[in-house]
Length: 264
Image (cartoon, rainbow, N blue to C red; front, side, top):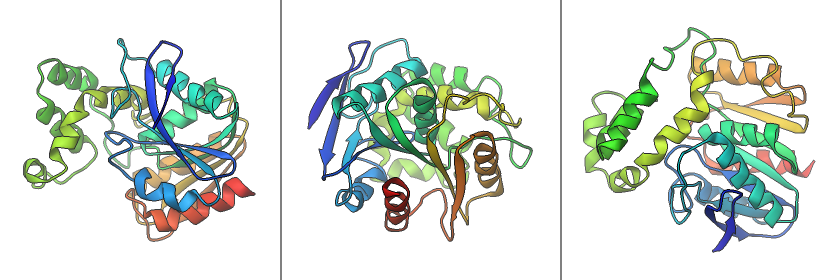
């Protein structure tokens, strides 16, 4: 394990495996080096890249500094880029895709950018994020009602209502509760683009690197609509659909697509 110090003094833990150009993987909500999709993905990429997996602030072995701001997470990615030599490819999934997009818009040193299903809501194909949702989530965390915070988030992302009460019996439940305090971070990143309105045409004007925007062929219409909209507003983006895939994309199908894009 390596550690790097971000601009505000927060220590960020990371692992680096493989050889070749640096590739930083950015997790979505509640995921970190010991839990989530990047674990099985990294070994498939390591023969082609020097793969960096890190714990986003507040998770795993990384530190956390209050108050939270999106810019601090952008600085965490910048610190990792500087650590690996000043340039890197970046791949982000789900809310991690939205964070990676912000890093490309505000930072330096990203060579190419790949994004899988940033959960934006850009039309009326699903309900927008409720008013006051972030305040409710913060209130639950402040009262140490971590389980309730996780359940509130699962309801937002569309987990079936009958399944949510059963989640506390799953082996992953303690891991979810352990990082529940970071859920407001992801909502802060996403909420302005979960209002059911078109993406602002100029929001990511500074993203000029080659960008691959991906969705799953079996993902819901609202998610696919969002990725189509994102590809249209990014000047150098191309859209690719991974047939048969959902938001829980299979690493063995995703890895060759990333290898092809970043190696091109």
